[in-house]
Amino acid sequence: MAQYELRLSSGDDYFYFPVLPEKLELQKKGKGKVYDIVGLGEINAIQSRELAQITFESVLPSKDAPYISEQARAQNPALLLPQWYVIKINGWMERKRPVRLIFTGGSFPINLAVSIEQFDRWEEAGTSGAIGFKLTLQEYVFYGAKRVYTIRQDGETKLTGGDAQRPDERELPATYTLKAGDTLIKVARQILGSDARWRELQQLNGLTDAQLKRLSVGQVLKLPAR
Image 1 (cartoon, rainbow, N blue to C red):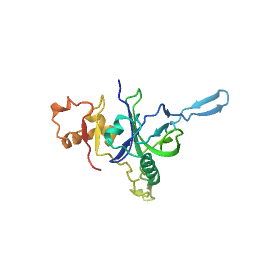
Image 2 (image 1 turned 45 degrees about the horizontal axis):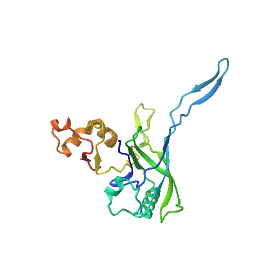
Image 3 (image 1 turned 45 degrees about the vertical axis):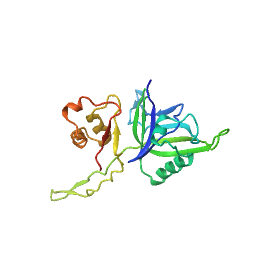
Image 4 (image 1 turned 90 degrees about the vertical axis):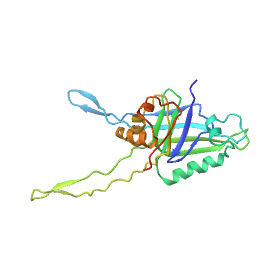
């Protein structure tokens, strides 16, 4: 049986959701534009898709609830009160920086940088201190400013837009837990942003070439600091 995990992280700071949602909805919509061409009729010009949106509902239970996920119990055997999760999510929202949602074990795993767009919560009826919630997340795309050049009358090219770049807002975690099908190249691509950095991961974790062929699910890799 697949082991389902759902966690939210900001750099080294992360938590597992104590109760997995019954449904996790991911929407990816296209942005095709329709034009009416004389003599041809309507045509559809395909555009880049809209940013993905993820929504799900669950509950933040009191610490003595029997249905808490194994990951949440392992992370903190004493468990945490529902208000701790509320404060954590609200704090990440107020920082106005992207976080990362990771879902494994299902038919469509998710490892996505997202912004927290909406965090609704309510008191769960018939429970002792449990809080129900609905979380709406929007895919976040990292980008940087581009150089702008102009050609002067003397024929020389001049940089007019400066070399300013948007600061890299990603907060990398300190470790990564290998999943089925993972390789160092895949981890370097997804987490560090470049296939070429797999050697960096190998050296940081002291792995021999022979050990690279025997990476196991659940093995924890150290990640380089930014």
